[in-house]
Amino acid sequence: MDQARIRVWRTGHTDVVRVSGTLDHAASRRLRLVVSSRLDAGRGQVIVDVSRLRVLDTASVDVLLGAAGEAERRGRTMRLVGASGPVLDVLAATGAAARLGVYDEPRAAGAAEEAPAPRAGHSLFGPELNRMLLDLSRLPSSDPRRRALQQEVVERALPHARRLAHRFVGLGEPIEDLEQVAALGLIKAVRGYDPQIGTDFSAYAAPTIIGELKRHFRDKGWAVRVPRRAQDVQLQIGRAHAHLAQRLARTPTVADLAAHLQVAEDEITATLAVASAYRPLSLFAPSGGEGEVALVDRLGEPDPDLELADIRESIEPLLHHLRPRDRKIVILRFFGNMTQQQIGTELGISQMHVSRLLRGALQELRRRLPVGDSRSASA
Image (cartoon, rainbow, N blue to C red; front, side, top):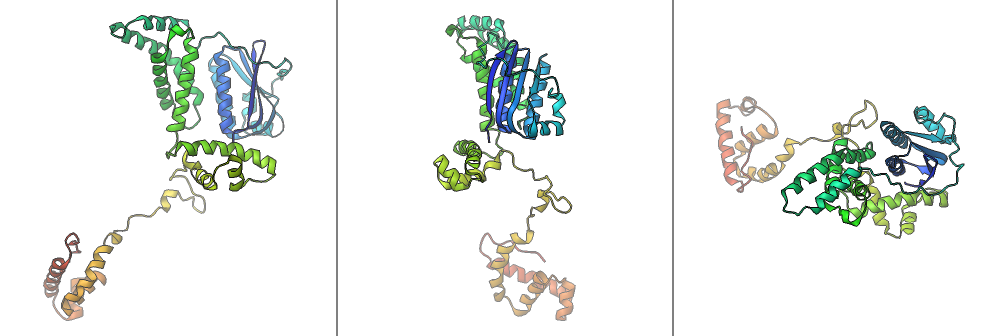
């Protein structure tokens, strides 16, 4: 569920980000993007006000620590204020309270009048790239200098694109993959940017790169590919579940969710079934119980006898075409698992005689088997 509400305003040289409601893993991703955008704007400090936050899960703590680490790498600070009750308990239990500045002297985050943060004139990629892109737009497509200049622009902007990719660290995808996706988004932005419009390259490139990263999570992040419709309905179910649970004072049923979202109950059931397809449980993860047996150890193995079932069913009626003694030898050998020596003792004949009779019986069975089923056990 993603039930957090996030508001941002500026007071002095500080951006204040107020979070209220429920901060789960999905909502914490939105919060990290908001914090990163404030850091991009060149603010010295970002205050995250959690005084109105009711619920905070441990997955969100990891995301908050990642955002604080990003701020530190940029030479800035991010800290939490207003933590109390269950939220403070979670932060203290995970050891994140001190690292996030929860115990520092709280700043009056809400003292200033809440107002939307003004748009900053900070350029994420720098003014030099704007000039290079303007020169690039003036070169004809046949000019050999165009390719070299385009490559130089991409190389200069690549570190900034990678920084955007690091906003999504900890969300289940390797950083190497995220950096590659960000690089592709940067190339797309360089090729599609038109400096004649007068917009700063940052205003065009950053949304393009972030959009490419989000598209990667939507289309490639699922371990098992599910239809886009199922992904959309899953997000709606997450939001509706919390809303209905509060309104109905109980866990909503499939019928409740279907009526609220105005979709068929079968679609709700199918969507809930594929919800675990994004990150399914590893086959090597312990499945619980005595001995902590892994799931892979509970899987069956190919049964070689099962592959011969068709042949055995085909051979059985053909046995009636053999002479009684030959039929008994075949049955004792392949169904009774007796050796030729044991069969000879049973029938009162030599082992060599048994071998000759068995070989002749098998040749007769192969001759009578339909084409394609001529495989048979050997003596």
